[in-house]
Image (cartoon, rainbow, N blue to C red; front, top):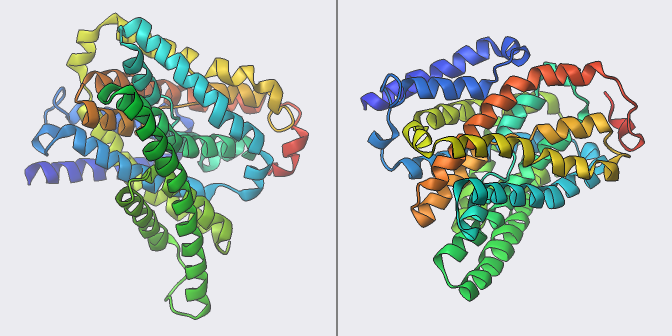
Length: 417
């Protein structure tokens, strides 16, 4: 009980302090997730020892379920924020980011894992898959708020948000293939992957999420029309809808992360748009209330001794992944989407592919299947490095982006605010 009260006080205190200083933090070189992680590390086993996840239960189960819940709330906020017009205009770069760029990030990360950490083929592919998805929660700290609206155009903000939201769910197939290969015979692994992970896990999740989102939007409209609801606020409704979709997808053995995002997109598309901006702001506030404690938990769980034991190969792995995982893949395709994104957009997009809660979730998922702590030790180092480096560079690079004016691509000119 003491641990619970300490955790509530610390996590609540972090949220309050960040809320009071949110505008200042947006302009500073330190991001909100980075501050929360540092607080977690300070109060964790390697700091003041006020909190220890091992005293709460199984560390990896806590990380997996807390990350899954946080992703659901965060993804709903992202889906409600996206504008259908922007999705239509940016459909080509988004599709390329979710196919060729995502595959490229997986391949590069896996090659570096095999080379620097000495992992076998499928173990390297698993670690590469864990750190492939960009994070919607960390990305939201970059692309939301008045600072982002002042310095970044809508086409860039929504492209980053849409990609990070969708690839979190799609990464499930990337992660499950190596897990199955490492725990089953080849024939069993391929058949189970195609049926359970791709067809049911991904395809079924997208379908169920879209159906639930459509139904939720129409039921809300019907209830409002018949005056069955006391007010039209979406706050409680969308949070409950997120949890319903997450739980239903899990019961059906589907990817709950993708189901929530698909449901949020469908709800956004078919719901009435009254008081849209106010509701988006409320949803973002609720998402932040969930995500900041998750980053504190991550800070508490950092395996500092294990990082030290892995030594320079882990440091080299972290730095090379951040430099090579995403920028080359994005820039190699920049010429194909010039009608939607210019060179400046591609450079910014290539650098900002942050890791965060999605990678925490998949690292914990890998551990729950294979019980090998190496995936967590290596992935957590990458996540920590990404949160710090991308957080520090977000504000100055956003200012640099806005200071170099370029021609707006014809295909997205109508999105300029």
